[in-house]
Image (tube, rainbow over all chains, first blue to last red; front, top):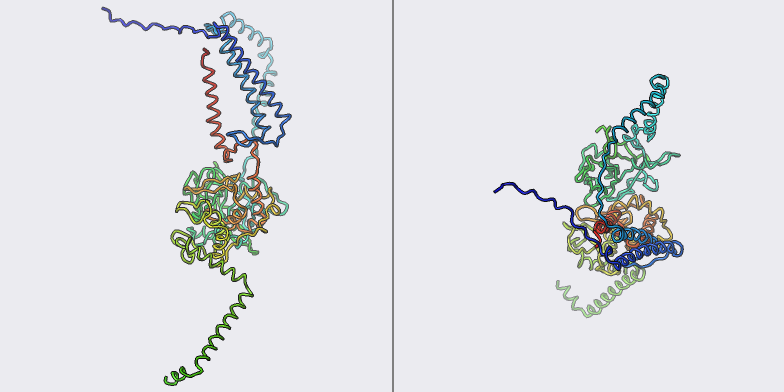
Length: 330
Length: 263
């Protein structure tokens, strides 16, 4: 009696099953017809596309079930192209699967290494080339080539530098200065405190000096939201309270998380929402973050009125507005 | 005392009293009718106010208080103005169906005449924003679609969606869709700030600019759908979902077919 375990026999590949089309001429002809039909459909699809492009007016609408009222030309173009491309692919695959040769072939892999003779030959050729060029004997060429290559390597540095000027203190500062009037966005009209009822909001930008132009970059930094509450609803420290004016409080509209425009103001809860990541700020507590990923309250702009009774900034923002960046001081 | 009772029994007492009574009634009637003939609209107005008050006492006072002074569950309506009432009741938001987070738009409970009566009554309590007249609301003539679009993107789009389809706020509250809302109600919402919505004052967004916003909303509503179903016009979410389910499902089907051996 032997304790040896019989090794499991290699089961080998399963027997090759031939397709119907290989043995049955009728099935082969049927497969051929199917492939031809698919290619034919593709041709019809292309014709539909050409027809839609030339003959269907772009303002004609048709009703398609599920999709609804649809521009007829767009529908024809899209369906035509979809049918044309899909049926070429489907026909080719069906052809390959049913009619092209179905033999199983075993191909052996070759070694990648060249044989020794070829390798020795290569080394000899390179050495001969190097000595013919005379690199060793002509140091002038060698050095000047080195200098040329090294300088050429500087090019990408210059081009990368050209991607933009360094931000300087643009991230730290906005256009708001002491005495800058708040004007409506859009419309550029100055605002008086009495223009805002309790519960009102206004989207504002700093007033432009004559001849000055508003750039998108500046709008993206300077946007300020004015909100009017009842003064007794505030829950602010003395300094922040002095930054408000008769219940009107001003915040940067740029979210301290990712810089989206925070302007979803819920009048009843006095909450400001950011539409991007649902950061929620409590207006009565100087935009304290009460929900969401924002790390800091929205910067508050100190406001007051000027001699003509218009709302103006009392001072610039005391901290950089918007999301964090490396050099941000706080 | 004796003298008074003697006078009372005097022969002339009856006729004299009768003449006095007739004179008083006549004078009173004359004064009253003079007032009426001079200011019939005031009388009609006060009748409307009375009707509104009756409707208010029956339908609204249980929450808003007998004198619209408000209560623990409902705000005071003194000074909210006719526009506010016309918006809340005219769109069916008030009376509320239940005390959920937000009053929803539904089929109005009161007809136009009753809404007018309620609005007139509430406006009579204290001055507030008035219902805009049809002459004011000629947005087709006075509005500009381009200006309206700019204003909408700055002031409205963050809550109501860039295509005015509405969007979510916090804790179940939402900004409703603006599709199919009457111009009058859009205007009233802007000047009164119903529920979560802030007020947009006439100085920061002028009446003409408000009409531009309305014109833009109507233009967005009537915009043709070249590509068929709008998928809610809420942006990449539904479109992406459709591509991920239908499109990738189709690709998986094709991949399975590719790998299948032909029989």
